[in-house]
Image (cartoon, rainbow, N blue to C red; front, top):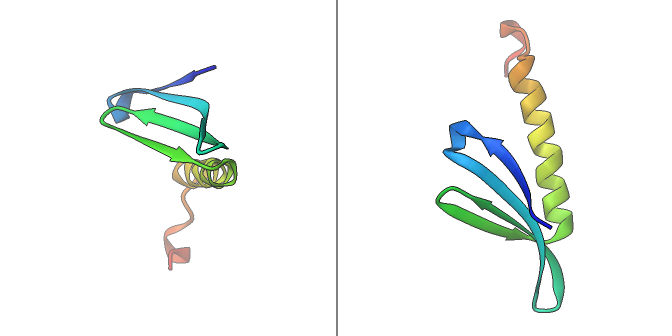
Length: 67
């Protein structure tokens, strides 16, 4: 079952689906102009990183705490 995520800045919807590649489950991400297949653990790490970076983008640290 495909799930679509609206991402206007990316140029359109991003589709996320589950498939099988060489007998192993994979998560397929199709975005405008490209696609990526990831093992489930890679997809989870990407999801966590996206959440962390979105939080950082919405709440940037104070200017004097930047590295």
